[in-house]
Image 1 (cartoon, rainbow, N blue to C red):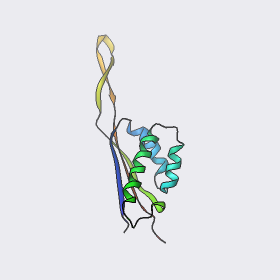
Image 2: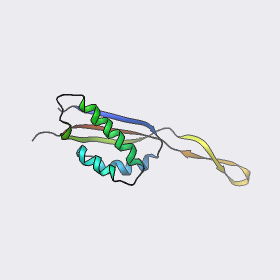
Image 3: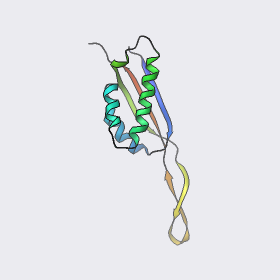
Image 4: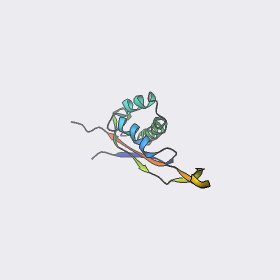
Length: 116
């Protein structure tokens, strides 16, 4: 059984759907390759995910038994966060209609590759 190290960013100010596009790019990759992919991605979510991944690597580096260069993204997911509703736009017949400002929770779990 391998050790796993977790990093989370809760209440990220982006929609979960946009975060999932980028998370799908790096899921299952070695950490060094994933950091390169995120560094050159044009999507705004890549910045948030790169910081979470760097935090997970930093958490793993605290363990002396772990080789940071052999880390791989084991699990990576984006969950829905609470919806912030403080913006309004004009609606029909003089009404005010709220529009949703969504948030999400980013979670990345890294671990060492299994030796075969």
